[in-house]
Length: 246
Image 1 (tube, rainbow, N blue to C red):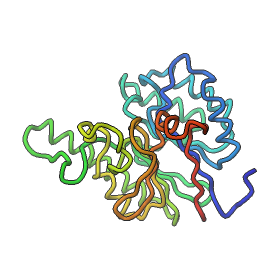
Image 2 (cartoon, rainbow, N blue to C red):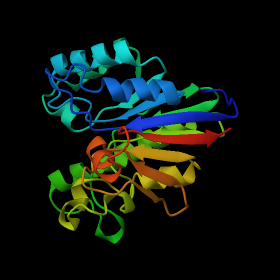
Image 3 (cartoon, helix red, strand yellow):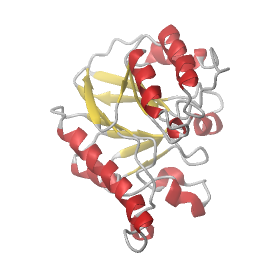
Image 4 (cartoon, one colour):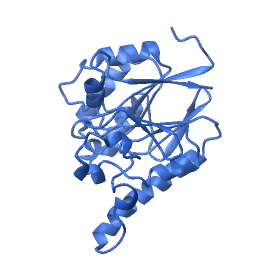
């Protein structure tokens, strides 16, 4: 029973990978999240191939089983078919607050989100040098970091929660092959998290990574990829529940 108004209970999961045939598949997850949390975060790859009909299937289930506020960001799979704008609109119309360089507030807590992008971490991060296509690749990550910082700047709340798809730190990628870290996230996204004193961060994408880590400034970061949560906590329904003290 959710009775403690001094906290907000945040449930988070990513990488649902809904297909046309997924209807009802996550009823237990959605129903239990509704019972124990005040808000449910969806951290990208909500559809398997970015098809509108996959989004419609997910939207139907969300409307049927989730009775708490929903906030989401898209992932790379949601962009696969080039119809991500339609996917976003379908989910928005079903009641999901879809963040894309934007922010919202629930129960006095601010939420900001972007998809994020890849590029690597620290000294191994890809640099904007050489061919134009490399410069554009790096600029995409820089632009995502700037959009996240602008979204956070809009929030007047002390408590700030960030949703991403791509990882902002290496800690939550441990378990993946190091050769693909560059494609799983970017430390450029970590910079606005530290500057804006974010309370907690959730991301998906790294199915084979680790459940949690911290930024350089000690901000907790949770990898909530559903496949990872299944593997790490096989006796639990696969979402992460975090209580934030107000």
